[in-house]
Image (tube, rainbow, N blue to C red):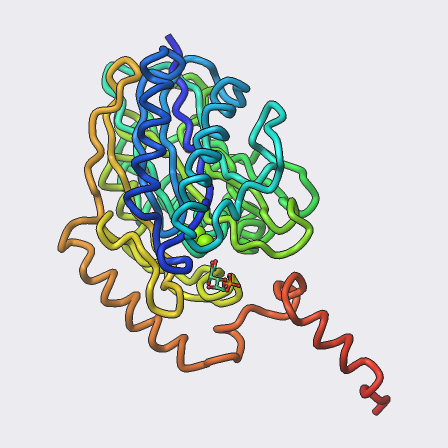
Length: 368
Ligand code: F6R
Ligand code: MG
Ligand code: MG
């Protein structure tokens, strides 16, 4: 029997500013999802936060893109927004860009990562939740998990992984997608996904073999908030789900992909490059210069759709070195102040103040 795991997330208000989601909001969301669980609409749920983003993790039998499930998420965000307004949290309801629900949360502001699959005899599922960055931040770690033998020993050692995987890559500017195979196409894949603001990994599928080739093993939220809203309303802090073990990367191989705090765009005002720092749940808040960008990892086992866990996977001294490195890189990048490559390149600034500045100076520019 097939189970669907859905993460639907939105920023409905921060305490203070864009730092984190307070407990009061988490409570409202839990209550709302508990009702959905009691009425049998969902099997199970967990509510977590990545900085100022409220993440609803739900399991159910409704498949992906289900109106019923998306409505539960939307209504939960509405209730959370009510509470956020009462507390006068910062940016209350900021990611709810539509006035009314119309069948699917996609295009309405929230981010979505969901996949339907046949639950295996034992099914480890990992949720990665990021704040102050964009979907392309997952390109590097997802590539490393599923395609880089220097990260994932199983690609070399495990016969059932040796054939590689299929990557579904989206061009989020043109709303197009392409399916590409590893290992035979990795150079072409890297040519695309190295441009992480445009090309993003949406899903990974197994090749024909031990696991059904039409059931994804990883999925990433790829909503582009500023495209939806028409003006900048914050980065679309992404989430991902990754299945592990038995013919897939081991839990430790999945997590290993985050041991390098690579540079991502986002951070202060969504306009800066900075390192992504893997942190325990308790540090899922953004402080220094509204950051640095962070990721938390929640590890689950599924039991007939029930969620066992989470285990706070980055709550481990094994990641202290990565965090230390992230802090060194954060300090180094910060010293550049308003200069690139700390500040994003001009193309990526077109939704912020740069067009206004250029317009103001238009008359004063003369030919040279
Ligand atoms: C980045 C982010 C924050 C805000 C910044 C300014 O994703 O959410 O860095 O961009 O705090 O926020 P406003 O314009 O709301 O004062
Ligand atoms: Mg916010
Ligand atoms: Mg956020």
